[in-house]
Image 1 (cartoon, protein in one colour):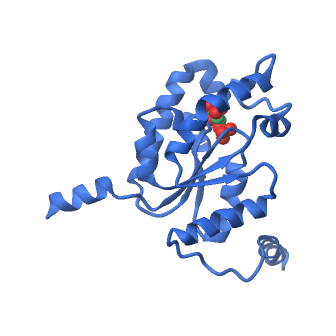
Image 2 (cartoon, rainbow, N blue to C red):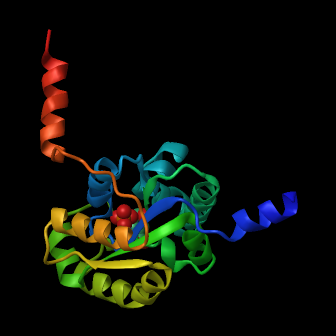
Length: 208
Ligand code: S3P
């Protein structure tokens, strides 16, 4: 009996919503919005790693190197797989590339790939200094090269693919919720908009 239970949990899909996609595809912003809409906690794995290490991603790359960072990503994925309370997680853009991470990601839950073009990423991240991989002379070529290389890995992991470039944040969230409904997710009905709820919370805080 115990063995059977262990086998089932080993192979069944986990309870989380996992957001994957290239840097700048909106994983964090969409994750925060969906956290409100799905009434689930949201975590960003880059922030989890930064908290554990007590330094920024750039500092980790500089002092420990990229391969140490990739190992940290795999360790965080194992923690997510073992967490049985349904949450929303956004993964760093490079996490799905490592072969051993791909089955791990799929085991964590329902995986949503936020797809974006190189040109859109470039526009969104121009001037950003927090992504070590894009600190080079020709970031657009680098982005093109990385997206071409990573696209198949993202697609292999994904249960849902949403093209994010030409539509608004709200439309991206609606598209994801629609796909989740089709997959049998129970989506809570929320009367107020995110903005209205935030305003209400703000009002209460300022009341004497
Ligand atoms: C990386 C993406 C970053 C961060 C690190 C490496 C990548 O995360 O993990 O800079 O390899 O694409 P975001 O996708 O959240 O920017």
